[in-house]
Image (cartoon, rainbow, N blue to C red; front, side):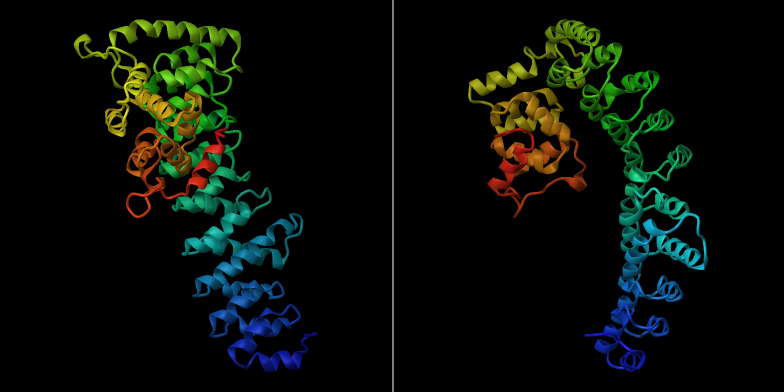
Amino acid sequence: MGGLDYDTAKKLATGDTADRRFVASRAETQPEILYLLATDKSAEVRREIALNNATPRQADMLLSTDVDESVRSGLASKIAALVPSLSADRVGQIERMTLQILETLARDRAAAVRGVMVAALKDLPNAPPTVIQQLARDLDASISGPVLRHSPILTDDDLLEIIAGAPEDERLCAIAERADVSVAVSDAIVQTEREAAVASLLGNASAQIREETLDRILDLAPKHEPWHAPLVRRPQLPAAAAARIAGFVTDSLVKVLESRSDLPPETRQAITQAVRQRLPAAKAGTGIGNGLVDEEEAPKERPVDRARRLHKEKKLTEDTVTMALGQGDRGFVMAALALLSGLPLPIVDKIIAGQSPRGVTALCWKAKLTMRAARQVQMRLAQIPPSNVLNAREGTKYPMTDDEMKWQLEFFGVE
């Protein structure tokens, strides 16, 4: 269809819903008609007006408080997309109205509308600061999380203020996962002693952590098992820190630490010495979490050796694995998964440390465990939150096909 003249548009604007939607969607429709249709009784018509780039900003202002969520979502998508082209040195009436609309939508009662804003603005360097500040403090972590994780608009002062407000773990973890977390922000996160947030910080290779702060983490780390794997993989570990880590992590993680080729000779030497110092304790016996126990209760062999013996005797079963999970015997479970799956222990460690529900589930499938056991491994060994755990299909079946399982394992170098 060709151009839409004024008389035709005016006539169609009083027609049925289909006619009004057509007029509302056309770029050549006159502004006054578009403004009129912004108050149309049909949400479908108003949605077309919200999406139309030709709609005058005054009409967009009306639609920013529309009763229909889909209308406001459409408007949010359109207005947020305009942000990159807004001129910083030109602040006229249109720019002011656009900013007002963005601020209104950032406070919208519907998370879906605010989510549209987040998707468009979370990493823009010229996003309106007032809008970013509003979204960053949103109590819904699905809204504030991506902004806290990505927005270059947020300063250290902003982040420190948010941390001081004791946000829930999801928001604190998002801050810990930002690129190039500063020393000040790292210190503040560690001071909260929140397990998930500190684990996220340690897993962020770009986060700047002072040696004094790392020492504080190491003081607390024996009681926080989720910190162990990211500590072992922490880049540029000081020699003293590496030696301390080797003193309390599981045997499998010690092997990962020893195998790191990126550490300087003095650090590798400190690790070797720390491992030697572990041997007397191993002979005396170690309990859960490497705490010493009475000699009468001490195991006769290391967890990895016990797993190998049971496997050789064909007694390494799912029951022994789940029992060890319940007892917190991480070293034994890691070794058992490696033996049952036929995969090298470093690969098993990498999969577990990755905390991917699908990856861990595929590992359990490879080890010929039931999906019931796979769920326990996800929660107890990989420390995956219950809300993210991959559950069984039809009660007992694996939720992925064999090909999907193999594809997951390929991510970790399993052929």
